[in-house]
Image (cartoon, rainbow, N blue to C red; front, side):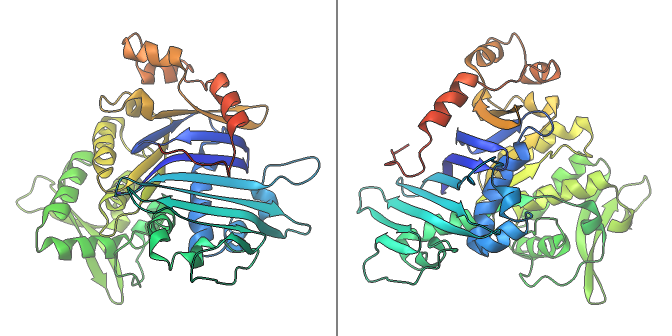
Length: 400
């Protein structure tokens, strides 16, 4: 699998400078308004800009003025850099810098992608202000200054794994009312769960149909949902005219299970199903980002929820934000997977845990959940300063 191993963010919303190493599972912890959602949104911005356009990615977020970090003078450039490990043991490095222009205009000041396969020839391209400064042999596309070149360059086989990973990152904001409502036919036929879950019935139907061959994924979903919501014995897609809905089966102490439409199910049940579908969807996302997965879920089910997310790393890289001590205290979660986020003078600091905090956890003097309850999950100021000083979007990459 391709994995994101490091992300650098510069001047994105309240993030001035952040350099964070990424694990298969990553847990962002911090107060409300600290910058956790902005970190997640930076990844979503990359996917939107490549899947659609930079203009649409900005428009969906209120325009470039709402995205770039506020400044009293010359507008700051927005920059992101992502280092990937490749399936063959090689690596890739992709970065871009977007310059703000008057009247909400912008342009891509610089963009670069380097792909270094294992024991093979290195490939790269670089674009500045719409012109290639490092070209790809036999490929000379026209690049508009407000577009990312990787969208077009992905036609070249060597750059395709980078494009596929970045466009496959998915941020989920599961909305129970969307899962509860009658759902329109899905043009994608249920291969990919949409961000709000509004095609959940189609995704479940696709999993069920594939399960007629092996049955493993559907049975796992059914079993895990029953552990999160005791008494639930099954769920399936149900046609209602030209639309679809979800139908749940529950054991109510009678001879046969009773059936309930999604309209009658709780928010927690629907969100739990949505997270299961996000993890086990037929076409896995390269990275799944879920904010506060514990929301509306009973605390007793958080261990099961974490087991699901940990199981999901075999299919997708996982990033979550949380305020839950129970999630942090999961025995399978290591301190390297916890990322602290804190707002200092309105600027987000995003760092690994301090060495002191790690020692407290490793010596079992405190659990991460106990430290969270005492407001002792803090950023590492020395790391934050070093990262800000060392952040360089286009420095020569190092293999990680």
